[in-house]
Amino acid sequence: MLETSAEKPVPVRVVSEAIAEYINRLGQIWVEGEIAQLNDRAGSGMVYLRLRDPSVDMYLEVTCPRSVFKAVAPLSENARVVINSKVNFYTPTGKLSLNAKEIRQIGIGELLARLEALKKVLAGEGLFAIERKKPLPFLPRKIGLICGRASAAEKDVKENAKRRWPAVVFETREVAVQGADAVIQVSAALRELDNDPEVDVIIITRGGGSFEDLLPFSDEGLVRLAASCKKPIISAIGHEQDTPLLDLVADLRASTPTDAAKRVVPDIREESEKLRQLRNRADRKINDRVVLEMTKVVSLIQRSYASINSRVIRSSEELIHMIARVRTLSPQATLERGYSVVQKLDGSIVRSPKSLAKGEEIRLRLAEGVALATTIGEESTNPAKGE
Image 1 (cartoon, rainbow, N blue to C red):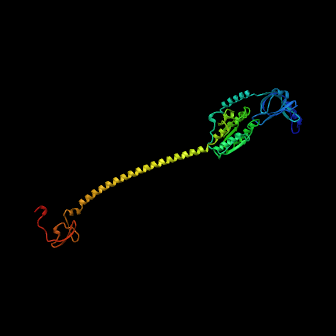
Image 2 (cartoon, rainbow, N blue to C red):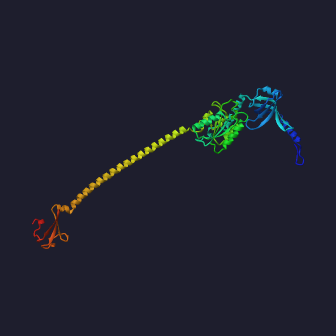
Image 3 (cartoon, one colour):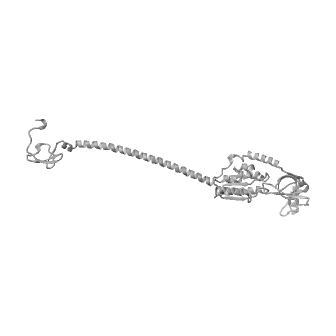
């Protein structure tokens, strides 16, 4: 262990040699990664590789003897490999690299087996469960779109979405969708769109490709990131037969980019037809209600008329009977039977002949008028007794 202080610093050479000594203790190690860059210089005894971790932006330089490289050739960029190497620290420049002793290419069979194992792990954690999937918004304010640069997938999504809903708005991130930088760029775009408050749903899309081309969309880091997003995600990777792990963790798997466009926005013609049908149903409902209420009103009017008419008839009959009774009891009726009312000139009624003086003028009220008379005296007999 180096003992240093501000008063007793050590030279750069000493620090570099200490680092080299420490690294040399590691011995030989096996490293897995993806070939991001391959420099095979003609006539050189060495082949230089850049090995990257597909999940993060991290590289290691690899120096490989040509004989070791030829033993596994052909190798190309983006190939997945396992390298048995010795870590080397070059003290003059402070550069760290790997000296390859053996290279093994990871075949498709092994990759499939690894993906299947990862799939079981993620499924066991519940990342593919139906109950955790978020519903898509009916009409998103803005759609986040992650796609390749000037890709056919981008064109398919945008054209088909605008055909269905012309006012649709996209927030697009064009990134690498295959190769060494795909996972890093797709992950960065996904984080950015998920944190955008105006984006309501995110589509991750690319066209078809080989199994190796689609491997970035089965990367564990990207899959876990998609599972943690707040916004619903639509995965539209490759063709219907392609099933990267992102499809399983996404809230909706679209079979193609065109299918994603159909799922993310409604069809304005269909919605207009639904509105027309709803208006017609509402009109019919209101019309039926108005007719029903008018029928009730008419019925009430008829019932009211019948009730009033019946009441008028009964009142008319009562009035006729009352008039008849009044007429029966009226003095006029008595006068019409031949009787008369005797009155003095002052209008008082004469009830006894004793109240009249001989020669006094009186008025006789008859049924059809009034006659004047003069009394000549009181009659001695009582006609009422038949005398």
